Length: 76
Image 1 (tube, rainbow, N blue to C red):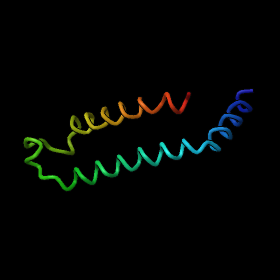
Image 2 (cartoon, helix red, strand yellow):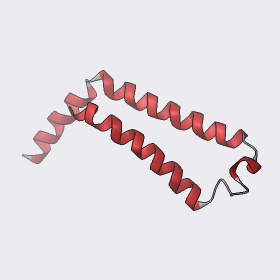
Image 3 (cartoon, rainbow, N blue to C red):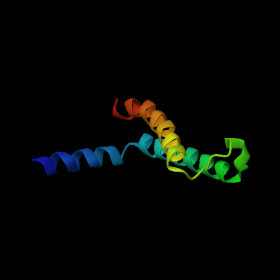
């Protein structure tokens, strides 16, 4: 029964165009942010290492907050 429900839901969500729109928006934001960060001078961040684990965690938190705002529209 689980596989039947899973296949039905997967077929339904693949046919929805908003999934692709949201995926493209999130991907574009991620690419723009990372390419913009690569071009920045390291002194702009107060001498922090941009590739450090704490900095990446902070960036991940910011993107997750954005995704949490989009999730209700997807599931609603």
